[in-house]
Amino acid sequence: MIEGVMVKKLRVVPDERGRLMEILRNDDEMFESFGQVYMTTAYPGVVKGWHYHKRQHDNMAVVKGMMKVVLFDGRKESGTYGEVDEFFAGDYNPILIHIPPYVYHGFKCISEEEAIVVNTPTEAYRYEEPDEYRVHPYENDIPYDWGRKDG
Figure 1 (cartoon, rainbow, N blue to C red):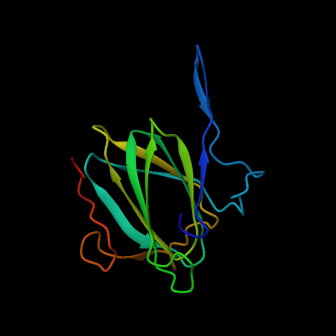
Figure 2: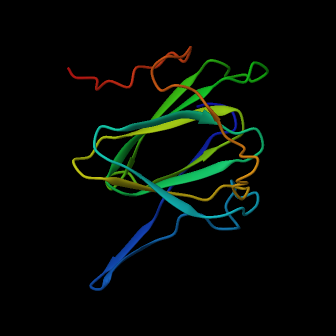
């Protein structure tokens, strides 16, 4: 796994009323600070990526549908420089993915319905000076193909 990335299996507690799922707690190993909580979605087959942050750490959980979440370590000083991690997250695999700064990340909705991600980054979004650096999803130097791998 890419250096600094952590994955937490999320516990789902169902009962006759519905379910509860804790995503991130302040006593979790990966908790550093609180910036904000937001949700983002993707429609089936849509790729949202690539981007990275210079300051913030992301803590992402797919709470509806399924996403293929992919990380690329572009940090030359890292012991896992050039490594790619791929996670299948959501309804069938409830996990939290902790993504450190300078690790490129993106996701693709692989469910037949819109997928929903909840992110709890360590920094609040700054509209005047966003800590977000984007790279084209297909035309880049990242050794990853977003296509489905049949066979």
